Length: 259
Ligand code: ATP
Ligand code: ATP
Ligand code: MG
Ligand code: MG
Ligand code: MG
Ligand code: MG
Image (cartoon, rainbow, N blue to C red):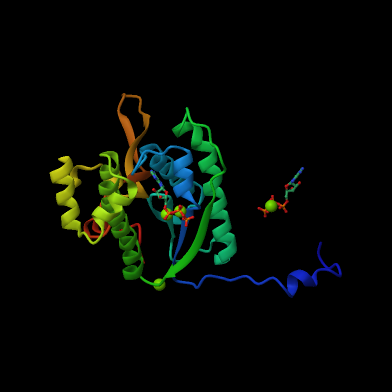
């Protein structure tokens, strides 16, 4: 309560870190011990589509809940949320932003679990960690997102090879050894020659990760007296599995990261 003799414990001991103004704020969350979590819930390896779709649905819920999130990018058990450069969300207080994001995401994950895994009991509570990083200009925020997508590509290519080798009878140790020191080209050749897989034909959700953003779409809002549809542009949240490293995506979607 205000003005009690104990009030000094707040005044003198609590310190709020405010994230610097005029920076995009990225909150990245990552599943804790999801190596284990994915094992005990028998996720398909290397990529369980339902688990990825559940993550994407949680990210969509985040954009609905927090309008200042302009873009999200997810892969595996992680998601990055980009807040617009001039956001005044909780006066840019770091602990508020982080704790709200990670707790809301986690709650939605638990609530929606049964929609994606109707026949799988949630055996232990999933939990996520979170960090916030600030990027001062368009180049650095674009490079941040490119860094995550390059990581997605490298990991997915490795994991695709690794699990094909394991599923063909190799031990995990043997598969690891077979891939040691190989380059991207070698991995593509291994997939083509041993398993008749063209890496580029793998689902885009695995290769490109998931991008979530708002898009203007013409929606029919009503039908007039002459049975003509009346259309208005409305913002719709879109999930896409596309390249965000090159300039093309950002040229088409210039509104997303406007400085
Ligand atoms: P930490 O707590 O340090 O993050 P972690 O076990 O979560 O540890 P990560 O580096 O975050 O390790 O890796 C995520 C793990 O979760 C990987 O082992 C990955 O195989 C698994 N995983 C996450 N999502 C999926 C999915 N959709 N399908 C299959 N496996 C998944
Ligand atoms: P903020 O988001 O700023 O925290 P708040 O609505 O959560 O807003 P608090 O000051 O945290 O506001 O107050 C918690 C509110 O939740 C109070 O209105 C209180 O009546 C209600 N509440 C919490 N726990 C209980 C409970 N066990 N029984 C009845 N009401 C509760
Ligand atoms: Mg993790
Ligand atoms: Mg991870
Ligand atoms: Mg409260
Ligand atoms: Mg700036």
